Each structure stands twice: as C-alpha cells, then as structure tokens.
Length: 241
Image (tube, rainbow, N blue to C red; front, side):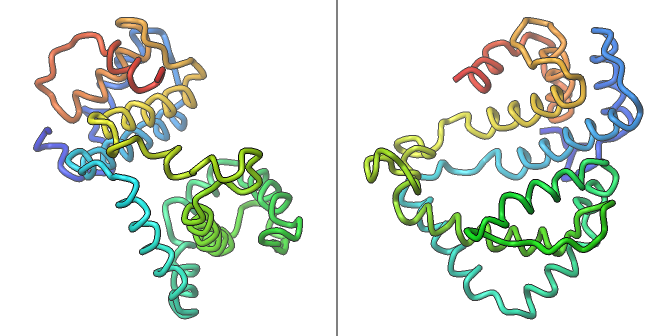
C-alpha cells in the first residue's frame, strides 16, 4: 500500500494524470465533469479497499450477528437522532452529487412510484423539482435498512416461490465466509462500474485493453511499485464468476 495514498478520498493530480493517460492511450476522451466524477468514484473505491483489505471473512453466523446488531441500533434510534441525521444529510457530498447530476428528479419519481403502493413509504412531493430532498432519502434509507434486516433475519426471501428452501443469507455468503480475495474483487467491480459509467465501454478482460490498462493505473495508486502487467486473471475472477 502506498504511504502517499494514506486515507485520501480525493486522488492527487498525479493520480488523475495517470488515469487520464491510460484513457488517452485507447482514445477514450471524457469531458472534464465526467472525468472528475470518474476520479471521485475511483478514489472512493480505493478508500473502501484501504479500510477493508485486511478484514476477516464473515461466516453466516457472524453476518447474522452483525445484522441483528444493526437492527437493534435502528430500532432504538431516537427521534432526536433521526432529526439530526436528516438535517446533516442536507450537507453531505451525496446531496451535492444529487444536485449536480441532473438525474435527481428521475430518482425522486422512481422512489415515489415504488413506495406509494401502500406497502412501503409514501413520499409527499415538496414541489422542489430540481433535486431530491436528502432528509427524505435519509428517512427512506433508515426505514429501508430496518425492513432489510427483518427480511435477512427471517431466513428467506419474501414472496419466494421456493418457500423456505431459499435462505437469503446463505445465498449471499459463501460457505466458510467470504472468498480469500473478496476485497480485491469488490474493488475491481467498483472500478469497472465507474469505468463503464464514464466511458460507456464494457469492462473486458482483454490483455492491455482499455479497462485492463485503466485498472493498472488505478492499482498503481495503491502500489506504485506494481509491475505493469495484464490483470486478466484478476478481472475474470472479479467480473466473470
């Protein structure tokens, strides 16, 4: 792990230049706004990996204990705490990104349509057609988490045609815990998602192809001494299994 990377959520100019060079080598040109969002997404993915790279695999039992702990925490959240969270949400980077994305009203309509069926949360339109009020999304997220905990702890998918044969936790957690290279694979998935979203090109495992070289530039931010070689095996393991 590069000491210079530390816990930064923003990439340095040199890091961004290396990413820009990798894209330019394959004639992938992005607007400054899209490129900035791409670098932000890569930075967030690298920070997640930095914090989780040494994490121990979670077994089914450990996962259920974690979910139970979260469920209790959400259930005991005071109204004051909810209010503080909702007020704080207005000042988050997520709020700023929503406001700048131009897609927020579409998201608002989607959420309202999904949760106004009487089975979930019914949002009231505020007349603010320019953005999604983050406090409402924060409240939505808290209630959504509580419902998700209930589903996970119930031991089955709701409305599953297979009934109790399908254990939701077992379906998500590999026997004995997460795969050995879980965090690295999740990092590659996040970087691939950011790459595809920005360039509109599929993240393929072609040796020294657009995504392969892009991934190399990203991984070198973590380890500048990494030898420039193909990431085909890593890409296949992360994206094709």
